[in-house]
Image (cartoon, rainbow, N blue to C red; front, top):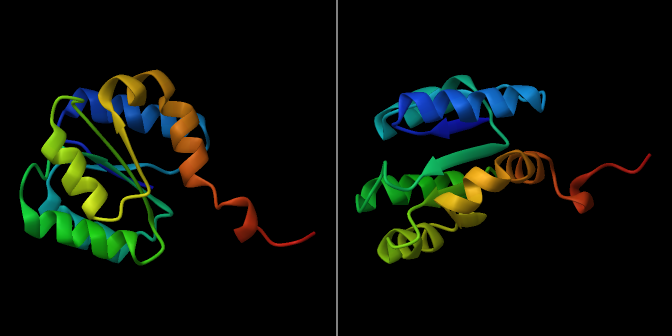
Length: 124
């Protein structure tokens, strides 16, 4: 699992929550690190603080490519930043939530989107 979060302290919080759920969590601060990190790790989930790419269309295009390669993308940001929500949805992210919901339900959201959907699981 990779998290793109510029705030160091919040990135630590997200990493710790992921680890408590038994997921390996790599936190990066800069979108330029995405390709290098993806070359080393094959995540099931990319968590994106929408303020990091902001209105940079090239970064959103890269996030869309990642989303379309079967990596689920969970994006969060300020609820008043309507344009960021539109950019995220336009980039085919799996789920977009406000900061408040992400903070409140972080563990549940990470667990839900880090695990494969029920129809992807193999039959026993």
